[in-house]
Image (tube, rainbow, N blue to C red; front, side, top):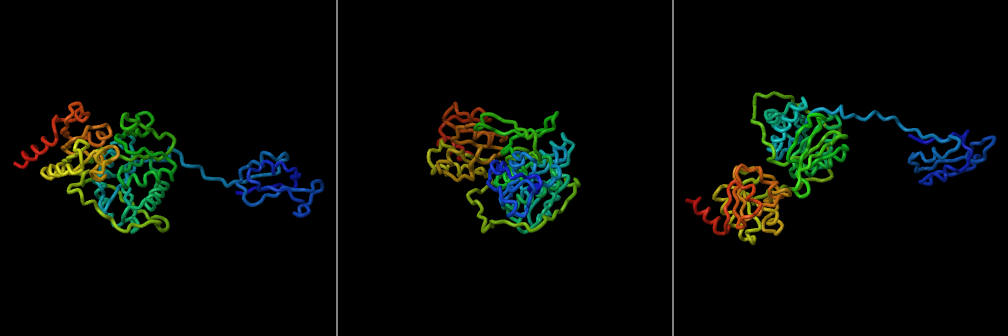
Length: 405
């Protein structure tokens, strides 16, 4: 790439100097520049700092200036992108449940596109998990192993995934809307110049255009927006845990495992010093079969001991509404709702929770919802299978007493 001034044409008129927005053109004596001409005494000279903007080319009255640019290979078109990818999130070298849920949905979408489902597995010594991904719906597993990838860091993970996208060109990429997925999905989307729809609650394929329909709550959960990525590929979505159900494991399924070596050294400007696990939960909130959640109706943080006692009797996990978390009654890791965890237990107890739409988004997929609230008009009763209108400080102790019997 460069800019050329034809010394035989340039008259030294100075119009190019006036047009240059960066002041990198000067008129100099042809004698001083050793570029003599039978008619013209001066010539235009380009200094360092030229951006090749081309403004001087348009201004030159004798067409003496030419900008040369390297020819680029034509960019990939939408038709070049094929297949559905699922980012197979792993922790401690074990694939997380959200990846299996996404594989199940990917199989459904693949049937509508006649496409292949690929799981992308990044980590260190995680090859043993490849077969599990195939058994849950993957046709192929792309495996990248490196000690730097043992624990999640957004920079190296994004570098590797962007490289793989450039090599294989998937049409769709699905990731969990987890702490990990949210941390680097946007970084990947920005680097590969595509869109990202976060926190989806449903996915489908438009039968005419074959575009991915990405549905998510909007305006505080008051409407459901369906978003298209029409002009860019891949189409990227993050999906909350427990929104979709995984397929039954089929150990007879066969698939390919493609081991890929990242070109060059995988580096990171940050490092993990230590991982401190949350010990406040006896039962993992997102995987629990029973959840007991408390809300503003508890009145003060000390009353969460009643929720914990009830949960202990049931062998349940403890949840909370945003109001309780914002009041510092309980840590954020317990929050259920649009800005917290999405859960789908067999039984969900909503104790002293009014049931705003933001909370419902995170728990309405529960098999059975049991609500306790003294307000008979609380929105939680609109979605509850069973409702008890009464003082929670009388109802819950009685429930605990009967269950202990």
